[in-house]
Image (cartoon, rainbow, N blue to C red; front, side, top):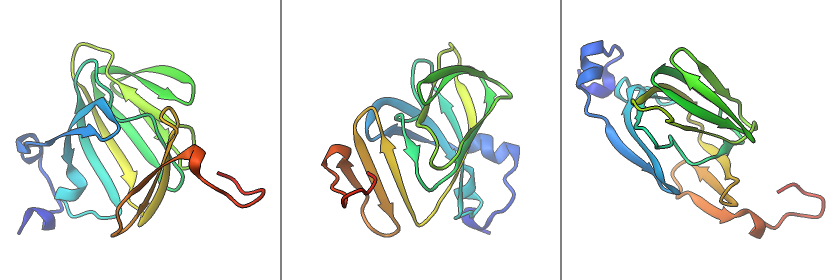
Length: 162
């Protein structure tokens, strides 16, 4: 049985996974160690990731999705989640939902130990997302390159929404 055919990952197997160091393509301070549990178990419709964010770093660039739900469950450590314009302290046992079409969000490790979370998100064939602090919109379509555009440059029909 190959890793991609495995439907049970034991604690020891997960701990032995090396993980992948990731830096967000739009935010050099958004660094995390990522263990893709869903990928290892053959899931394609959900991304399920065990992430570790070191002190002082963010999990991602401040963003929102139009079509995909996301959520995070904090396993250990402390941090801060920004949802819209509000900052909230987070710690072990906290659950954060990011509904599709909801407010932009990001997490930051504000403690002195790793912030360890289980992050779950849909994997639709397409999604649109905004990076409001950067004035950017991303369009993602299966099997095509991602498109990143300046929100101010988007042309819409009369009365259409950006």
